[in-house]
Image 1: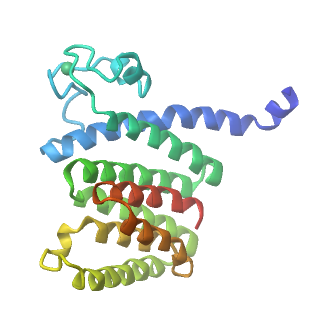
Image 2: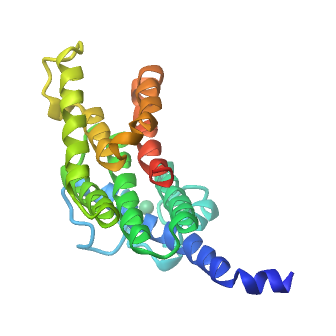
Image 3: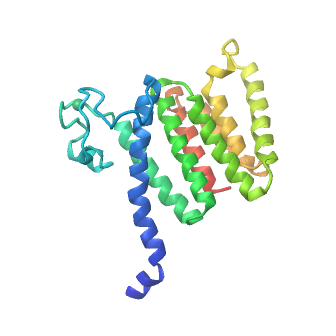
Length: 237
Ligand SMILES: [Zn+2]
C-alpha cells in the first residue's frame, strides 16, 4: 500500500490539487457568467449576492460546499442561488481532473484547461441568455488554436478546420427553415465551428454524433450537447 502511494505520489498530489483548483476557478467563472451579460466587469468588485447585494465572505465562496451547507440559498437574504453555479464548479473540477490524467502538467494541459473554463462560461451564458458571448468565444478559440499549433507546428490546420466547418454550417443554414435569420444569431453554427477548429480533419467522424444529437435533443437542451462535446473531445483527439 505505502509502496503504491510512494510510487504514485506525483499523481495523487496532482489529483488533490485538481479537485481543489478546478472548482475554485469554476467559482470565478460563475461571477463572469453572472456579470458579463449585465455589463459588469468580473473583477470590479468582490463577489456579492445578486439578490441582496451583500458582500460574500470566504466561507460563502467555498465551491460546492457552501452551496450544500446552505441548500442553495443566500446566507444573508435566503434568496435562491441558481443551481447552474454549482454545475459550473463541478464541471470545472471534472475537466481539471480528466485533463490532468490525460496530459499531466504540460503546455497542452494549461491551454486546454483555460479553453475548457472559457467553454463552460460560454455554455452557461448560452444556456441562460440564449446567445454566444463573442469575447469569451474568441478566448476559447484562441486557446484551441494555440494548443493545436504547439502540437502540429502550424496554425493552418486549425484555421482550415474552422473555415471549412463555417462554410458547411452556412450552407446548412441556407437550407434551414430559419434562413431569414442572420447566421450570427444561430449559436449552433459557432459551436460547430469551435469543434471544427478543435478536432483534426481526419477525425471529424467524432463530430458526427453531435450532429445526430442536435436533431434528437429538444432545442433548449442542445447547448448541453455542444458543451459536453467541446469538453470531452480534447481527450480523444
Ligand atoms: Zn442575498
